[in-house]
Image (cartoon, rainbow, N blue to C red):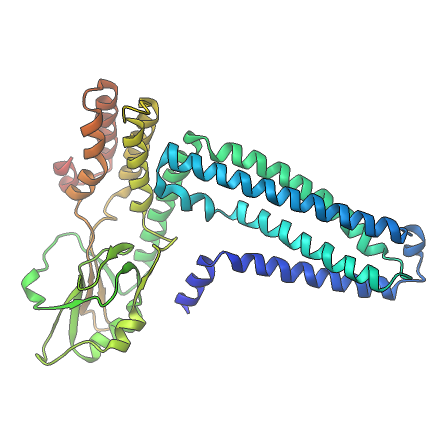
Length: 389
């Protein structure tokens, strides 16, 4: 079920289909409403002529198509700016936002409504389409307001400060959601010390296809591992790319002849062509690092943007606390069955700050901002994290 929901959220064209379906039903429903109220006072008050209704629908169709064309052109301009100013990895951020998708879907739905209404109008020339015309007028005003809002939204979206702030906020939200899931899940134990010996896992499972490792169904996997008295540790973090014959996880079972069924692998482990849109905080923080590095390049030379990214990274890592520790999933008998390992704190710091240091160490303002970020992180960190810093 979770895979189906993720697929529906990933396939954004389904939103357009929903808008088309809704506006198609509205067009047909208003036709039957007009047909049933032909002799009412409402029709007498709003007795729009047939020619006005048809001409307005044609004018509305032309206007909507023009706005859709402009909207598409703006999207292409924004994508070019995102790729050049921020990073090529930030392109999906704008394409997956709800505002552009919903506004474009509303425009497409309105176009379908006008086309269906035009066909009905030509087929029934003797009817007075009072409610259809009134809805068309109101809908056209809403469409213009949405178009004006979209222009304002895009003008804010391409501002680097707003984008950086939003990345940091989303990273914090991911951390909060992650921590809440850990606390609310009774099968999870947060590992404080890396006491698990690698030699315990003497078998390896290698992937048969390449892609992004996006999800693991722990509930089914725990049941299967308990039945076979086995345990495993994931080698690849969630949302990482794997290739054929890469080791996905290592496992240990009391029965030496034990091996995983292919059906269980297909049900429990998801490898897709694209990373999940519900990625961990690292997806956002690494984008902050990429923006900072690009801002420090010779061609861009924008230390203010780099400093802003460093400050946001310091704030996110301050909130990180112990969220980077590995997780142990236990069965109903409190036996560790699944270990989900993450990067240790040394690797996290190196991954996010080393390139910034490499390209900005000659600039004392960059060096100073990094020290301030480390001081901010150390306020909420434990002894191990302070040692890494």
